[in-house]
Image 1 (cartoon, rainbow, N blue to C red):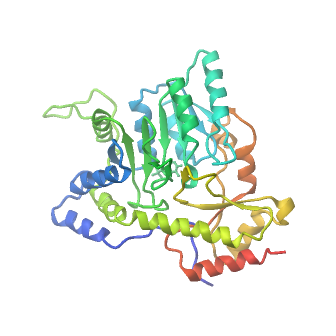
Image 2: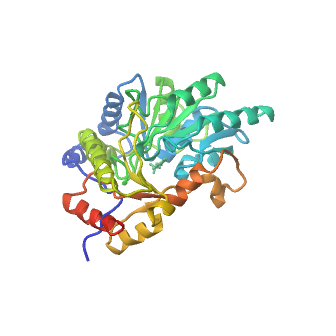
Image 3: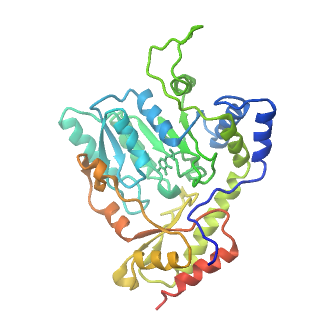
Length: 377
Ligand SMILES: *Cc1c(COP(=O)(O)O)cnc(C)c1O
């Protein structure tokens, strides 16, 4: 059997261990230390915008803290893109709020501005203006930020950007992760860069960052003893993980280039497949890191469906995976409201994520291509 080709594997740059060794030498083996501070500064410099960064244990933790800092409370409404990973929506339940899910539009597969506006107006009619909007840049593709920001600003609802998959993507030359009132990043093992597990909250003021650090380290008041006036969390990033992150930041641009090259490879391979669309940017305003490359297959035209292709890959020990199952169709969110049509549902039915790691080799790509070509008519 050939080696497994994964959807997206960790890809070390080479200097990560130096930062970890430093941490061991100085005994900074704790959820604080120089790597944490320097990693935060590296991200801040990279985002190239006036933002503050708090390194945390996970992207999910960052989203939880974003909701708390924005004052979202029990029974409040929070709007969220339906077509996403469950981690975008679960923190809404952590704070006892009600998720309201929004369909995608066809160009970016992200939040549909029209359905967003309908949901806000419906909430206001019930006397419940939504407290926050969570927009996602799925697979690295920036959402329609101009339209969505215009709506968020008009209704004065804070926007949280889930940029977990979109570090390195830009919209109109501005980095994803800098548009929201707050944004979150993830450094899980399958993301474009990894700290083995980790995340970050990106915010606009020093006060918000300090609040995030305070809450993430058990909300300890200033006192010689342990004194708490608020519920705290254990969400800070470890100095060891941050050491991995520092090494990874040095190669982030290379990782973006490699993943974009994978996308070009798939565009070439599927060129002569009618009914198969490789997911690409709608126009030059959008620059995707192409964290994952994906195809949408129209089985009536293509003569095969996404399961046919997935199983053919599986037989050759190549991992591929259906697109996200929309949140409004998940049993855990069965009672939540939903605005929109069937765009996300159809993407789930017909879409497949393809091996997209930055460490794919030419030999890997050859194996992938030969599976795809067996479907050629
Ligand atoms: C990975 C991911 C998250 C969660 O990040 P973790 O660091 O794994 O907690 C949130 N949203 C999206 C869209 C993701 O892909």
